Length: 122
Image (tube, rainbow, N blue to C red; front, side, top):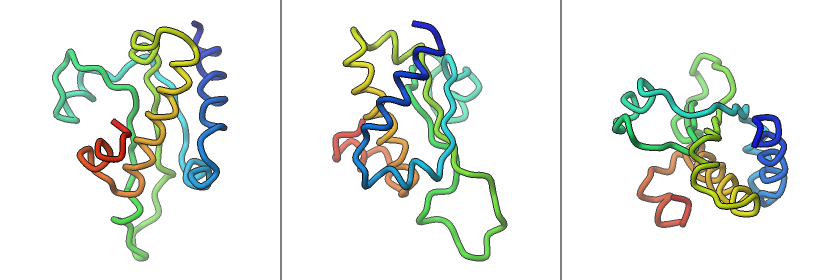
């Protein structure tokens, strides 16, 4: 699958995420990259051989203060190579993109990995 096709599938998948989450998605920028760098994995406390489907970068809503200096919009990155390696077909890819994006939006709300797993967004 080409990067352009993956991006089209990702946008289609994200458009189908429930309406209650759409305003939060609009606050974030979406980036698509092949895979997380080894440096990024180490920064996140992960082993070099671990795979990452997505990443949220920004200040979670619950940590923001009214007197904080302005910063750019939060960023959600989808890593297409691990997603494509994991998924058997486009239907599964759409589902995994949705779960990944909802997982990253959970970080936007301040949810940690354990809570996201409890909610089924692991």
